[in-house]
Length: 467
Image 1 (cartoon, rainbow, N blue to C red):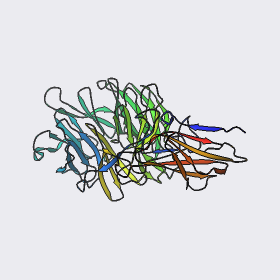
Image 2 (cartoon, helix red, strand yellow):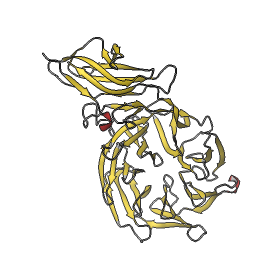
Image 3 (cartoon, rainbow, N blue to C red):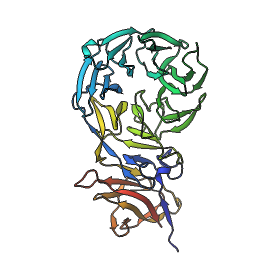
Image 4 (cartoon, rainbow, N blue to C red):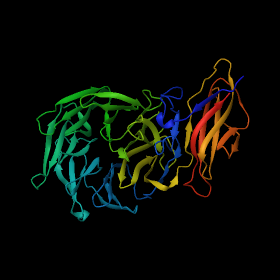
């Protein structure tokens, strides 16, 4: 009988599948720490997150503000501390807010504004931190959980319970208005976004009620122009993207798109979602880097999905938008973590995290690759009734002094390492022995860095199953 084969490639067109059993063409059950967009057709290893904050950061960083003065300012969600980070990665405690934890902050017209439960503080950029005003303005509602901020149409907008406050500096003297836009009292503003010239206001009623809305407001009329309801318990985050509005809503892994008037479910992160398993994207945990939307997934309960910094995008507009778990925090864990904020400071991607009682801020290091990056194929069931015998061939472009390790999971068993023979002339790893009597088969490929240079790793082209 003639040899048959199944060729798996072009993973950049499929990304992470909907489950380990099914997904769009070319998708994989998991992709962790790999770069699928950098060069279409080749899978490379991503750069590693390395902790750079030392012991300075000792709280959840609710928001990071890359500032025009060249520093990045970070704000403690519970202790109210304000830290600065220089481009040389030096962290300094600058001040502690006398009104307690800081929920959000933004740069606007020469000042850094920061919000606690009831007060809006501000600091003149470049001045001594001792001259700041922690209680520059008082919120109308004094919401204790959310004060999202966004600068739009030369005005700083701030969510505060069922209202949107604003700071207007158009006359040369900043004026605070506590209720520039009023929603029904039952709503709490949890996220702010933008579409064209308009402000988007995401609001929920209660985390126990699966009804939340996105309101579209032109910023000068007495009320919003259009709203849309989505059956989730919270609008988490407007994920920055170029001419493409993505919204994380709820705690069951759903990503929505916004047409300008309506929300539509677009993607669900693969996971074991149930009433006791929940994860979400924090309001400060979305950025756009080199045209690629990035967002961080945090555990709420039950660890339903792998946690880290995901991308949901493509190499360019002629490719489909796909999901990928790009970065793992420096703690090298994928569960029981919270990532409250990420930011792009110049070319530095910064990731703030909490792992148990530990806190930190990572930088994606351009000189070091991820250790232990891997992918898993979907479960392959070519002949469920009789089983098949396979040879596995792994085609690579280069090993860069590193290696690839392959594991097999036959008939839903446990992973067992596959002994490989490396054909250096053809750039192909081949299994030494056939994988026998496989009713179902799943493969895991781990990328091993060069022992002498941790920025050199293999580059994978394709996987072939011959039977």
